[in-house]
Length: 305
Ligand SMILES: [Zn+2]
Image (cartoon, rainbow, N blue to C red; front, side):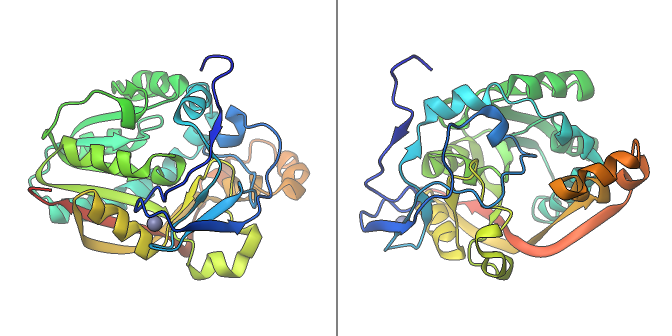
């Protein structure tokens, strides 16, 4: 971004439903500058939020003031996150489950577009299962990693402003993406445009009303500077309907991580982990966190919207 350009903007309408009945919800716990390290996928800045506003119409909770798309693009473009690839096995388990469910809905498969494709783990799996993979990702490092490791060409950039072919894809996947964008409506609307008629959008995002979120309070692990929006079942459905989608299937989402990854998130355990040396055996132990504190939603593109 250019010097002097605004990095934040005050929102006067809800990013999910466009309603103007918005009010202050919670004072932020995050101060200081935003850097590419604070927004990478494996960051450990839990419990840190922006000043949050709430929508009186759909209940959506969102950062306000919100970082601008230009500012975020300049940061995400520079993200390097080698830890992300370390967890390829755990992430593959998560993605395989999603692809299996998607294939129940679209047995004939076809072209699949992954938004926030990171290093291409999901797209590589999808290709092996017979899908034709494509995707977009802002981090130059991740796009290069996907090309080197999986020989998959991912577009470098932001979905909302990318120029993409319309009515092309059988499926669009947004796994832990929508909470990172200041323009959620523009993003799902773009997904609608590039999907073929009756194409399917798969969306995974944290649930602010989940039991885990309520129990953890301000320590909930999804409260982090990279997250600009916190959806509930209601605000998510409102957003999808407004963009021309109907939810056809949904479930609670549980992440799988390695024992090493989970332990390495705890600063107090760093010394202990170092003593164990490479800790490769810990990396092989998958742990499924049955928190169920995210939504996994399958939504079909309505025609004529
Ligand atoms: Zn709203």
